[in-house]
Image 1 (cartoon, helix red, strand yellow):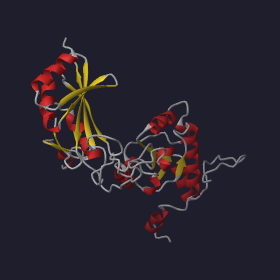
Image 2: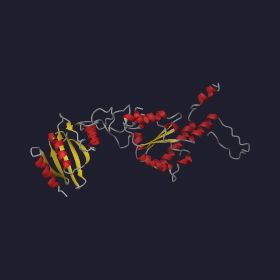
Image 3: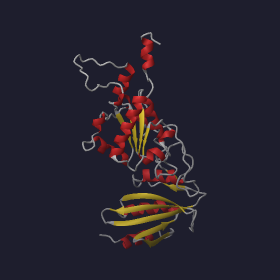
Image 4: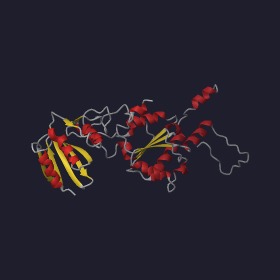
Length: 172
Length: 168
């Protein structure tokens, strides 16, 4: 995975050899900046995840931004009804690539127990979701697990955004 | 401090020709008023000290015995005298026009918008009778008994809370 020290190797020169796209992925997965789209009690649970007892910063995702232009992970926590659906979609559209979405809790994943005229039965009908977290609300451990799963996904994803760099330098 | 019975007697005397009756339900007095007399009676009640409108509720009687299909319930409270009163008015399905109480209590503004949104009452004289809970592309009225409970409707646009601010 990207940058890795081999045990027993002396790095006296301070030089590590790796590939550019792997360095980018390594940086991305360890510095996710979440945008909490909190509409209900799952957002309160997310506060617990960020706070010191569970400490989301151990996974590099503690810088919570409330601007879509400064974040790359939208964490939808709570019931999304039909009225706020266009708002959520617009905020997702305002985020810059690469961007990821975590659907936190039963309501965001499937509407939860709100099976009625008002609640959207799953936010994946509006935005692409990378990781679903079940639970009502999920335990903080489950949210941490979702962050780790997303990091694994980012580490394995194909090149994203690198094509443009290659073109600038006249490469294929 | 005035007694609730005294106030109710004053109302009955003042609107002797009106169709006003009082019953008791779950410990609170309920006054049933004809729709044509609603605004007059509410005005009198406010003069007699009911200075707080707690809520406005709509009821759909489609699936039970009732004089009319719809009814509106105004929940009143007198802060100075610690008295509670519910005012009920039956609204027929073919005439959903009801006089607005926004001139008496500011709280009626959002309450009537909710009743309009959920049941379709037309409050005459309301300054801004628009949907308050459902989105503006919603068709129908969600709490009517003949609305399919699971029928969601997609919204494609957002509403501005303060159009005057958003325009800039």
